[in-house]
Image 1 (cartoon, rainbow, N blue to C red):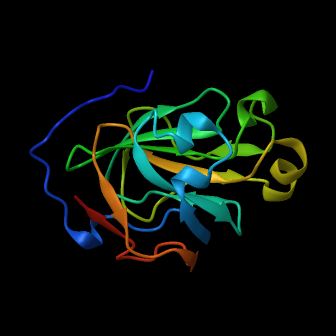
Image 2 (image 1 turned 90 degrees about the vertical axis):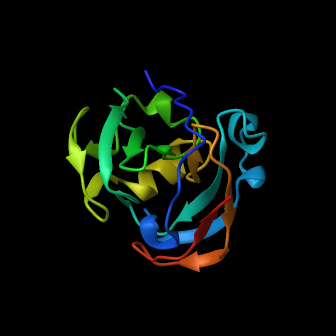
Amino acid sequence: MFSLFKNKNKVAAVDEFIMPIEGEIIDITKVEDPVFSEKMMGDGFAIIPAAGSVVSPVDGEIINVFPTKHAIGIKSVKEYEILIHVGIDTVQLKGEGFTALVKDGEKIKKGQELLQFDLEFIKKSATSSVVPVVFTDSTKVTVKKFGKTAQRERDILSFD
């Protein structure tokens, strides 16, 4: 299961994190699920996806590919823990519409494709296609750019 590792001594460069999905960045408080919008799992942001591809936002390791492939947990080389959760109520799809390209314990590079998903299927079958990106280790972030953003774009976050 995904851990809640805490490390207050982390320092991240602004360009360490890249945009994992093409789409529109929105405030996490606007996500239609209180687990995310009330930051119960941690701080972060959300993406209204424009395409069905997820790349790694950091260099690191895969902590967890959920059995239903709708979510991936990553630990960065700086020990940030990041959850990328594709859609709301997508666990109920039981993996349909998702293709995981990595496995638990795999070392990954920033920009490496991790997951593909059928965006149109998710829009029709799930509560929402929005993708929360959450720092589950108590890391605080400030979103520097909202709105349309390209996959792999840099300088979208600052670490508080």
